[in-house]
Image (cartoon, rainbow, N blue to C red; front, side, top):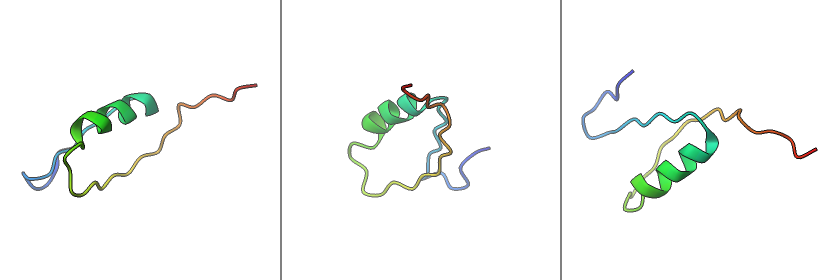
Length: 46
């Protein structure tokens, strides 16, 4: 799937940590961030 408009970028990640690290790098100068995520790679502590 690609972004419908060239001014938008779509970034896919595999883990919540990878998504967090990518956002820190890519969105540092962003005015707007629109995202949808279904994070399901968490594990309980106990």
